[in-house]
Image (cartoon, rainbow, N blue to C red; front, side, top):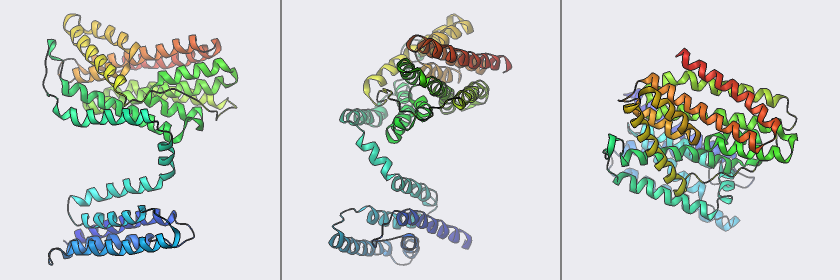
Length: 413
């Protein structure tokens, strides 16, 4: 019992110290409301108030009102002295009290540290967040709001049961997949917005692979067409973004069908790691390692691409089921190769779902690998026809090695 209480107090103190360190680090020469000591005491005050509320009813409410009064006085004085109307530190102080109080409960003991880390991250990345906001257009904001409404308001209302021929049309499941894929793309999209593509093609290639490796390939081909001086760094960005696709596929399967992941690790990791190694070998010979890149990436939370992906996913899910019933494994492989030409995510999710109750894991792994290989071939064609001949040749050699590794891994497993 005593050890449990000590653990709770230590976690509360750690939360207060974590937030306090970040606040004190951001302080200027002027006297601020609170630093590491004050925030640590506030968190301790929170857990102590929660403890005393067991013996004195409403003590925690009175304690919190007292904290609000003190914080309010401090804020009033700071606005008189500096005309500073920022209230972030004051609000965080009140949240720290609540987090400290949460540490006294069993559930809160796990939730409070997570919230504290999120808050600290939001405070620490203030400049990056402001940079992101400044570069968000009104259209991007409206598209994002529309999608969030549909995802979190409409999704729960959709029926979670199968309809139609072959029993593959499940409105809730299909839209959930659309939200999931869009969320992955949005992570990369936001990262590029926050960091900025001007940080270099290498970074753009890494993050751009989470959004669209095809878009990165197209942009790199265009850049090389403008000036061949950038050919090696453009090859690096293209190969790196294409390699990220394999890790993205692995992550999607991990979420959709965890038990399929161990078998898929071999081909996806082998192709992904091979691509990264070859990309860095190319980068090592490049003298231009930090040039700007303007890649047009559509907002993944825009309704149009989301709906298009949804329709594509339904079509591929139907085709794979149809091919499995009437043409067997050969039909699935052909469907995977053709589907991979357009989109690797849809066929990956379809195979992961079918592997749960319809097809064997080996067939699903082979089909997903073939789709990834097919998608890699498409990017080679883009590099060849939209870039220079030399650019296409280098990309072709590297992709040939990656594809050979992928095909070899299929026979191994």
